[in-house]
Length: 392
Length: 90
Image 1 (tube, one colour):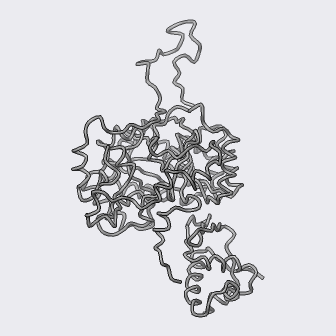
Image 2 (cartoon, rainbow over the protein chains, first blue to last red; image 1 turned 90 degrees about the horizontal axis):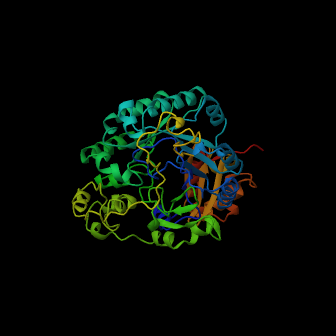
Image 3 (tube, chains in turn brown, yellow; image 1 turned 30 degrees about the horizontal axis):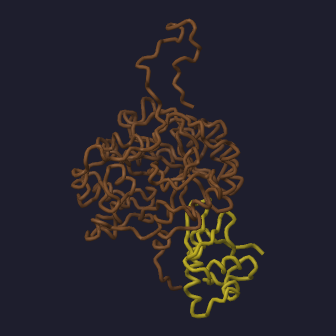
């Protein structure tokens, strides 16, 4: 069989349906991670209801979307979470869901163990409570470990331990791998993006240049036994491509459906600049995927811009669109973490105040500096839920 | 060893097949792996496996020329290796 066009070019031109579709079910979250890519916390009243979620699954089935990556917020917070999951599986749409583990009880783990169509990613951002909890909040290390214990006890093998790589946890990379191995899980490493609340902490948490080089070598050595969700294709600029497709899949093989049904080019690009439309629009998700102007333009050949003359461009392809956008860099130009160091130079030239802000923020509001011990201590007339932070 | 072309094969029950412009995408729900068929004729071969006594017959039915058979044989063998295709019981 002769193949005139490399496969990667076909992907760049777009597919009949996404390979990797992230569907965030809710902006509600019981945690308040400092680097949350979707600035989650509070539920949005416009979120898709159960019937709308099922209708969307019907559409996935028609489009033959093989599986969806369900996230949030914390998706398991939705009272119809398992109903949605069961409906997807019954309609031949596999589910891989991301969770902080707080609701992965022994019963939930048993349920997961019973289905080939269900896969779970437990988020943990450090091999010790000190490193993890500093980012994800106090007690979250213990919660994630508890969830992994339940999964292992239920006999689930190959679930994912999902780690966002930071300056503080990369020195623990071998410990993180050992931790995954101990519970029969597979390690999944992804890149910290300056998206959502991550924008505020990116400067402090993103890996150093030396750590990036170490990570590249480490990933090459571990091959396909460690997953990356194609997160680190910008590191291909060091020389060899990493396992995976090695391209920015935004709008080509990847997209995001957010809790209110807005469709973005990728999960790290929640900004109106990358908004294709809403699944409630006429024609639904299928029409957006096939016809949205944004997606069509993303499927055109990309402009290398300032990177055109660089010897590494064939490997890194200019890096991550979202990382550039949310650090104020032009899309046609180097990634802020360009392995040749061009990103650092470009960042130094970004004018203060010119960096785009995320257009949606569902972080919990902290209006009251300190809550009274009991509502009635303040006013005998206060309703019992006075000053309760709305989190779901 | 018997050639994969002489075996009675079928797409594994845990595999979903999606036609694409370049051929097709296969996804295995058990192994969670994707495969890419880079030729629309290979998709046609897969679609004909169920109604054919052997993979060779499926290739004939899809109009695969004799000269192209070795390439199809390799592609089918790879799909058997990755559990996308499996032996079909008579």
